Length: 286
Image: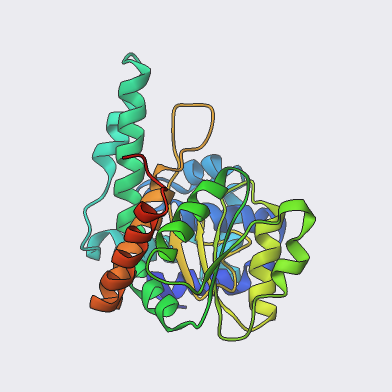
């Protein structure tokens, strides 16, 4: 029985594939909503997670705790000791703006997404950047609505590093592109629920072929994170009809900035050459 939240997260991720569907639902809610677990009753958490209260007790026991209270205490301790402030102010703003305009509610949601995303992932971005810098080649993948995030990251990275490529699966060539992933390469995969089947295939190929995997996603138990070397979480809440990718793009931009900083003067030189070539070859209007 562990009292450390990070150790608990690791334990749940390791056991997640072997849990029953109801336990998987409960476990995913616990890890995706740790603040709520610390303050809500077991009955309310069960209602929010769409499981029976007894399932939470049994889940706690499967994880090595005598009961629910002992498991919940790990989440309570996390709130007490966490250096980052809670994002409850942003959540309250969103919940209390039902009579406001859509533009106001969208702005509040995006503010919340960015605050939560950076509180969860800012530290992991630095580790991910160091991993990418050491890799001889970096592959980037994102499909459907995640394609712009992946493409934007690849485009920016290619401005100061040539050994970066996009896995796009155009014309049914995914299998061919996956064969390019080699041992010691690194692969960045972007996906959120419902998860793209192609994204899951890319993540699995990276693992099978000995490459490092960086998952940019919305849950620590998403299918692309279970064996990832680094997980960069983003929030996508919105009052609109489609999940917001503003925070995902922010993660990509922060990762690019970290990479450029790590590369230093050499990267600045390569960036300058790329920019000059774009202007020289007529990429931009005068």
